[in-house]
Amino acid sequence: MNDLQNISFDEASDFCEAKFQSVEIVLNFAEKHKDSIYSVFSLGSVNNPTNPHREMSIEGLWYRVYCWLQSLQKLNSARDFQAFATANRALFEITVDLAILHNDKTNSSGWRLWNWNLSEKLRSAKNLTEYFVKNKIDVPDIYAEQIEFIRREEDSILHMRKMLWASTKNPDGRHPQRWTGNPNLFEELHNVDSILGQSVIELFDMPLAQYYRTEYAKMNWFIHSGVSSFWKMPQDAFPTISAFFLEGCANFGLLATHIVLKDLGLTEHLPNYYEELNNLKNARLFTHSNYIDKWASDSPNTPEEI
Picture 1 (cartoon, rainbow, N blue to C red):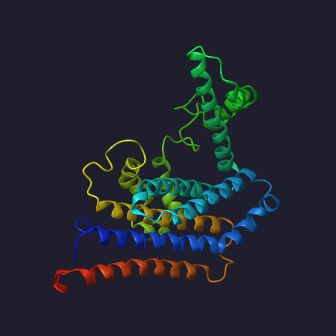
Picture 2 (tube, rainbow, N blue to C red):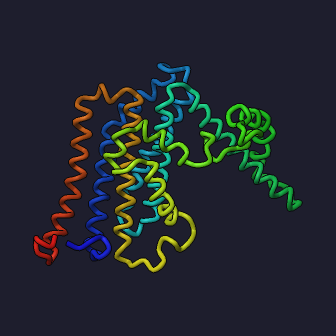
Picture 3 (cartoon, one colour):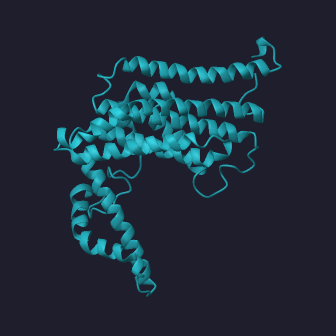
């Protein structure tokens, strides 16, 4: 059998199609349970009024997961590899945040995430206005809301930064890169791996910390400006690249939805839920095996060579 470096464009396109079908299977899973998720979300403020920011954050993040899966359903060409890479990164980062929120049953993590968003808006507004001041230009009226936001919110946000993120490494409580206060995702992934346990290994054959160290930078090459991702890359490689990104999107979409269902207490109440997860896994494997069978039957190699 050919290896992945030597497959034809048609073979690579079939491989990509199998992974695209895998995304559709995960989207169908999310759509099947969205009404149950929506129902519990709608009761969140009633059932858990002490943790509003936690519930609001989980709800908002899962809506983004669901929207990404719907968007991916419309992008079924290998030419969409950049969009697949962007979706893969977003779904990865959202899944990490959901795992952290899931592990903290208090409002603490949700409160940090909520206030980081305000802090980020202040940082952006300050950078915007400082640009005009530095260049001795009157701030255009179109940015009046940014000026008003600074006037209205700056003192309270600066106070909250010190309350939430001041440390020996950040004594002034400057706006952090991550809402957790860590400089990047890697600082959190060992803990997230322990939270998610065996489910991560089953999906990725590696911990998320390893995924970050081995795949994250390469994924970003396809998102940020530059030529590292495609320089001297043969055309036949792009369907295979798209396939790997789609596989990650399906895995993170499934993992994120499972985290939310578990957090809402639905996994123990939905009929045959874990049997459904196993059937979903088999359905995804079936789409892959169909591709492999087709690939093998089209190969001129003898069985001994396969």
